[in-house]
Every structure is written in structure tokens, then in C-alpha cells.
Length: 326
Image 1 (spheres, helix red, strand yellow):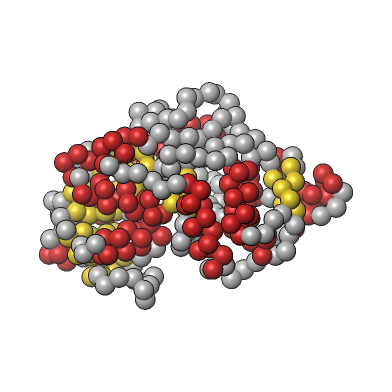
Image 2: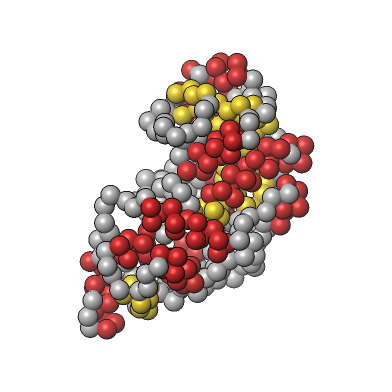
């Protein structure tokens, strides 16, 4: 198979390229040229910003792809810059479970009950641009502006859970690992009872490949892609510590006192739990054991620590409020 990957040098895109090349597919990676890992498998490269995709559209068409995977479409204009210029091929676009109404309610601390686990027919967000004004440089981000155009072309939409693993730019495990590296023995947390559907990057890449291998079944379809079983946030933190081989006491503090990177442990009115059985039934996709996935992710991040240590000033403030000492 010949596959063009838009944005294939980082995290999910990178892992997808590795899997495709590893099984013998011809891969063309379209990216900005800012990150081109030395250890990326042999493949063809085309350099262009998304907004300038039209300038390289001819080269992509000449490659003759059987399929195109768009890993990094985040806004309507980003879709408009690329999609009209893609050749007639099977299209797969990565989306997110943040398109659902249940995510919007969680961001707003709205206690309106919604059923879980939710499938692909669950209500979408009523509002738009979920991270606008939150200081995340995502003011125009909205996967609800991405999905419709791809579906109209018969594309496949994969709504991913919280992806973790090697090269994760968000370093989700670092909220614990950074503190352990810094010698912290007490970590301020909330109750941490919430269930969030996660997904290891290897399983994300496997879902992409499964969709590519079943174009007739996946065309025009939406799939939730997440782990089949989920541990609570607190249990996730404990598993990270266990895999790191270093214990720390998780000290429960009021939600208002939580450090920003531990807000995920705060009190929530309901779980964010997705049903991915459609992907299993239609695509034949199955995720690995979630505990094994956490272990593999922690192992990689232990071996690749960030350059900057965490600022634990907020930890001391929170711990003093509860115990009188940091």
C-alpha cells in the first residue's frame, strides 16, 4: 500500500509511519521540516506548512497514494488548506473524544448527567472552540470543524481517547514522574475517582492501520478508539509510581488547592468513559491491556526525562494547608 501521512514526524503520526514502513508499505510524509527524526524509517518527505499545501499537492498526487492519513487537522481553515487538494484516495483523519457533550460539561463543571460509556451516537458539544480563552494556544481548535468535510469525502474519522506513550508532547505521566525525580515523597491530589478513557500510542497507530486496511468498511464512518478497561485517575497515579519503582504518599487536598498539572484528580460529577466496541467489530481492532500500556509508557518516559524539572511550589502550598508541612 502507498500511504501519504500529513504530519508524520511526531507522536501519533511518527508511530503510524513506523508501523506502516515496518510492514513494507510505501510512505510519503508531508510535514513542515522542523522535526525530521534521524531514526524515522526510510520514507519519502515533502516539506510544506499546511497553509501552503497547495504548493506540494502535485508531488503528493504524483506519489499515487492509495490512502491519506491526516494526523494534525485542528481547525476549519487547516482542513480547507489541505482537503480540497488531496487526490482521490481513502482518507483517514484523527479526531478526539472532546467532540462530545460530556467533555463540554466536564470543562464547565456542569453536573448534568449523561450516560456512560458513550458510543459514537452520543450527543456532540453544544458549544464550539472548547479551549478558547484557556491560555492553551488553542483558541481556534475544534474537531467539530474538521470531521464533517472528511466524512463528506467518504473519509474515516477516528476519535481518540487520551493518548499516551513515547514522544507524547503532553508527557501525561510527568505529573508523577517529575515529582519522583525531584525526590518528592508527598504528592497533593484530589479524590482521583474519575474514569478517563486512555489510549497507548501503539494502539492509536494500530487503529489507523486497521482503518486503512478496511477501506470499504470504514469509509464514511466514525469510530471511538480507546482502551477496553480503565482504571481511576488515582489508580493510574499509583501504577505510574509502582512502575517507576519509587513510592510517594498521595495526600488528598481540596480541589481549589491542587497544582495545575494535577487538576485531573479533582472531583468530577461523572466519568468520561467511551465505548470502542464499534472499532473492534468493524475494524477488527483491539487495544492492549491498559496496565501493560501504562507500564510501557512509564518505562519510555523514565528513560527520556524532560530537560526542565518541575516547579513544586504549588505542592508545598497545598500540603501546608492540609498537614501544616510541605
